[in-house]
Length: 295
Length: 277
Image (cartoon, chains in turn orange, cyan):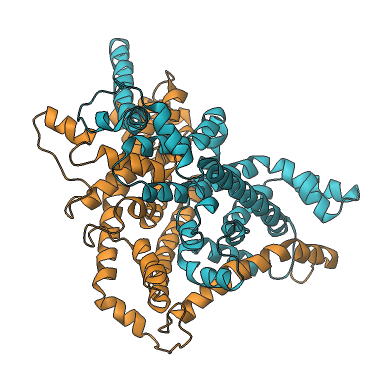
């Protein structure tokens, strides 16, 4: 095996992967290196003078109220969106899979938000959540409940954005769970029933849940990674407001780099962002390794 | 068991319909509001059918306040260019990683895994600086170039190509096909499910992307749909929800139509990309 490479094969391999490798270097690796270097400086866009600051930009982040607020809001968004969209996605997948009646019909309807332009649908939600003319508040008033200031109050804004996020991602989680459900061997259910799992609930506990465990962990990490990247709804509807109540990670990185032009500080934030993703992906690969044991 | 089965089947439909109503409500209100005059939008009733039809006025505004046709064409052009280049560059590399033995293969695959980690958001600052110094800002090319390579495509294709039998490739080699010919004439047809899955994933992602266009484009006539809608919102003065909803309908329609015509391809594509990614 060792050092028994066929020279022709090696040459072909290098030629075939060279274009991709050059692009990877130019579009991915060098820019990442540049972000790392910039994060050690006080670079400002359009200002030629650059000073080396070492880790000072990272130390600043620990006292940066805007950044810490964004970390907190992003974490809150993840905590609101992920459990709801995973549980609802699983519930819908099981309901849809339980019977053949209208199966493709419902699957398509629930998937519709995934293929709809998020910026456009965010605009629709803004109208639905309008404090005075919005249909949601009108509906609340009809049932004798008082109006809620959804996007305009700093107490509610993350919840309102999370509601839009849940609406948008449930369908995606549902199709991932559907794929997991259809791969479960039907015989397992019959076997479980013979072994005394009479109720649907006990069959869920004995068969579905353990067999779906790897899929669930996987959907969970994918959902967290996507939720951490929340940007479109914030940029369209709140731009971090009211006050700084809906500042999220990507929004403050965008503002620091492209509005305040502080690319040194923005690069430090971007490195923290990459570090967060690194941790999540490490968890995800652990999950992938676990998946192998079941298949 | 059988007696309760009808009840359970009915319950399933009721629950699914309730959920569907929640999911579809924004679409219903979007279309309904796009047909109404402003006075009716502000009259605070939950009436869905307009008393006075204002569709022509609203949709005319939607199509003319920004160059909407141009924006949609930009989106289609950018998404198609991106996906074609991504497959073009990723497939040969994925084939080499999956089927050829060469020194440094593990290293290259390691780079691919590393690349999977880094989203455009994190490296937008140096990309912006590079685009500015090369004069690419405010061109359609700047929307394509950063995405020429998808490491995710390499990863997905590599997984898939591994399952193509070695004998098939050996036979093609015996027939005198070059390695490059093998990639396009043997591997691509066999990896078609992976390629179409990736195409769906890539188009949905880039059709929706706002972050990079927001940074690199400041001219309305070069905007992609998400950025175009932001320009549309900025161009309207008051709360003209009728026109805004009409614009939302026009801009959402292309991908939704595409989805409705190719549902299986979409759902399988997103599932496959989701589970492998």
